[in-house]
Image 1 (tube, rainbow, N blue to C red):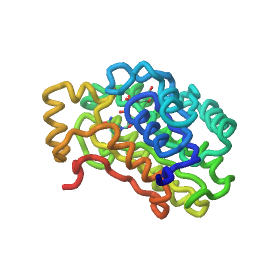
Image 2 (spheres, rainbow, N blue to C red):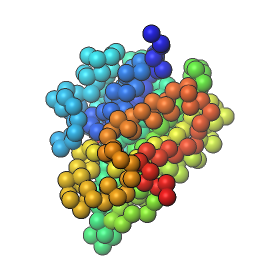
Image 3 (cartoon, protein in one colour):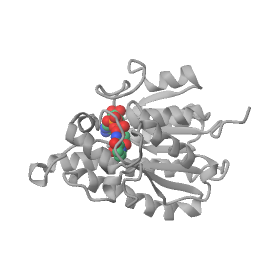
Image 4 (cartoon, rainbow, N blue to C red):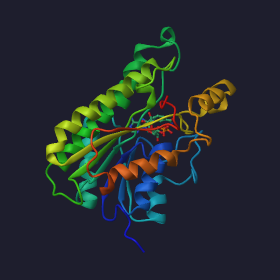
Amino acid sequence: MSTPRLASRIAVVTGSSSGNGREIALALAAEGAHVVCADVTELPREGGYDDDPTVPTHELLTRKFQRSIFVKTNVTDEVQMIALGAAAVEAFGRIDIWVNNAGIGIGLGPLESCSVDDLNLALQINLVGTWLGCKVAKSHMMNQSVVGRSRGQIINLGSVAADGGQADLSIYSVTKGGVHSLTRSLAIECAPLGIGVNAIAPGYIPTAMTRPFWEDPHGAAHIKEFQPWFEMSQASDVAGPVVFLASDESGFITGMVLRVDGGALAG
Ligand SMILES: NC(=O)c1ccc[n+]([C@@H]2O[C@H](COP(=O)([O-])OP(=O)(O)OC[C@H]3O[C@@H](n4cnc5c(N)ncnc54)[C@H](O)[C@@H]3O)[C@@H](O)[C@H]2O)c1
């Protein structure tokens, strides 16, 4: 039997309780990583498509794979984010992989219907939370030894909404545009340290966040036209590329925003 790609690696995943974050945590653990799960709530969001929704992610991981812990964390709070990094090191000794996945989709609609409060909240969670995660991850990774091909891998969740203009997404797209820019800037800053910084830019993936689109006939038709791939997307489509970026197979890749969109922006 071959050794799992992430055997003995330690991963932190924010927003790990639901949707993409839960699938990412499962996929990292399936490849041998100990995962530190971080979210504002332990159980998956209602209205999602998660399997075993009564079981918190860290319990599922511990049952199916190896020990995982949960650290209640609001990614917008710097003190809590520093405590998350410290808890990971205390439990497992180092941090090899940090996935900034926590995010929200609010303020969807034409500009005149959007509020500054929604903009500020989305910026706080999607962009400031990711920036803080990068800051805490870098502070640990830069002071630890190289394992495999790097001192650590930071992976941010962006969106195709940042790169291809779509109506009614002014708030969400601007937060994710910041995530893509942050990823490229930090990749240059961290490359001499041996820390990789990459992002995944998903298209529409069925989760609690996007259920209203999938359930609305116009929304579902738009998604089908937007994403030409013949099958429907699923959260595991995001998790696989995260595992790749976390693994030694992507050793010379940094500053990449990898689209996972069924061809949406290929044209
Ligand atoms: N679903 C999609 O189509 C899609 C597309 C592109 C990008 N993304 C990105 O993927 C990531 C995950 O999205 P999802 O669709 O799984 O959403 P989701 O709503 O299903 O899950 C998000 C998780 O983040 C947690 N969270 C929210 N605010 C938080 C905070 N302040 N601190 C800590 N945790 C917090 C929630 O509790 C939840 O468990 C987000 O960054 C999102 O922008 C999703």
